[in-house]
View 1 (cartoon, rainbow, N blue to C red):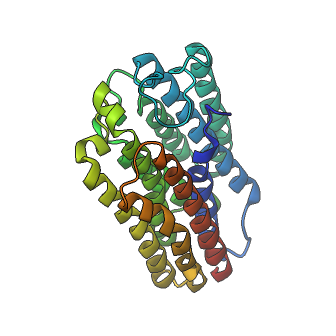
View 2: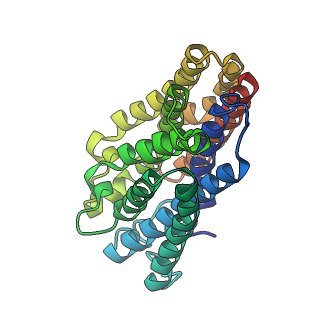
Length: 289
């Protein structure tokens, strides 16, 4: 359970819920619920698999040992599990995602196989392989693409068989919140990552600009939700304005200079904000459909 990192799972649930809600009211046949459930399994399994893969790869590189770790426990780095077991857990999770994705591909189209393969590759090579892109500062970009655009617009796609402007538009604020989770995580880890040569975007930007990026992403997600509601003519989705209440505490903490272990609470608050935003956005989009 610790290796799966349950607090990160809102990043997998929210895009599927929002993307599915974007399909409400578009066809007379209504939602195809098994496809929504399969999309959720894919998203959750990819998130868990990525978490295990990250734990394994960082652990064998020595970037997550006891002396450098500030955040939650890491199985390999803190010698709580054998590296081989964590690697197998990652592959098993990716396998679950692959099976559920295959069912969707059979029902919807082979294109989903390509998307799924790219998503699994992105999960593994975030910190795995000879040149992990997470060590080069591209982690946030890939999170935005796969846990924002692909997961949200893709969840609409598996319902309708085609992409929609609403699904693509809704994927932007969802992706911003998912990215904000990684930004605050990497903000916390700047000292340790700098020491071991892990050049995340936060390390490259520095403390002050990373904090500014976090606040920009949170504000952008709220503004983006409003724009999607208005331009997409789903006015009940304006419910997302209420999510600003959940945004106050983490934004205030980041602006006040929270560091180290204090940012663990900010990470939890950001996940809570993502859930609140996702619930309000999903309900609003569905009610307006």
